[in-house]
Length: 83
Image (cartoon, rainbow, N blue to C red; front, side):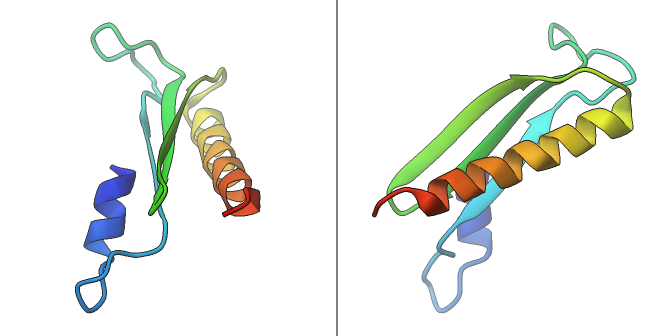
């Protein structure tokens, strides 16, 4: 999904520098085998894609907030990494 974000935000045929995506189950109900709180966060750039799995707890709003913070944290980590 993060790679798709880069492509979708292309300008002049060139992908965006970065793409960030989240997916998971915020609740209130589990989805198949995926429990509430299971969230994947990804950041994609020209060097590749980083994906992290998280298991958050709380209600739907809390899980969504934690996922957003995790996405921003992963983005910050990637931006701080040497090129």
